[in-house]
View 1 (cartoon, one colour):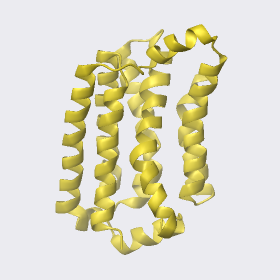
View 2 (cartoon, helix red, strand yellow):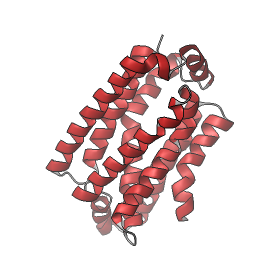
View 3 (cartoon, one colour):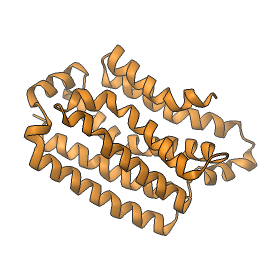
View 4 (cartoon, one colour):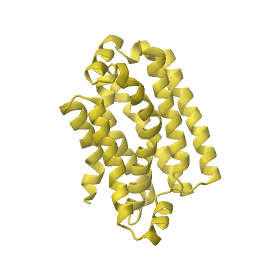
Length: 221
């Protein structure tokens, strides 16, 4: 598939879901279908004997150092996110306006429970599989791995603009993309250094749990 489409595809899916359909469930369906089926179709095209090698190439192999670093960085991310929410939530969010937006996007009521579960556990696994797994190994075949880390982090953070800008108060909404990019660099570096994706998945899960904790502690009614 065309590389430009692979890089911009997730952003396009979220744009259609959030900005065109105005629905978080629709955005999730489009976005996660893309993240899952693009790598899956390439795996299914491989002969049975090569699939194991492909899984190793995308980083689905356990490495002790990688898992320990993932656990440590994830705990730090979680604590930093919750601390920022605790000390700055009054400045970061315009609560009533944000709740109205989430309700308009159908992130409320009975929908919210399973959407929160998806954000905490499905989202980090599929995002890491796509960016630090599938695209990292695809780009690293012919490019400097350090450039690959930066490129995947940039396009990973790009689509967060679609959610971050409406959700946070100005000027924090623009600044919020920077920690997303830096987290992508950390996870990309872990993937490059250790050849494993599992540590970045663990770290990403803990970071997303921190984000949902902020929502549940300071925003949910």
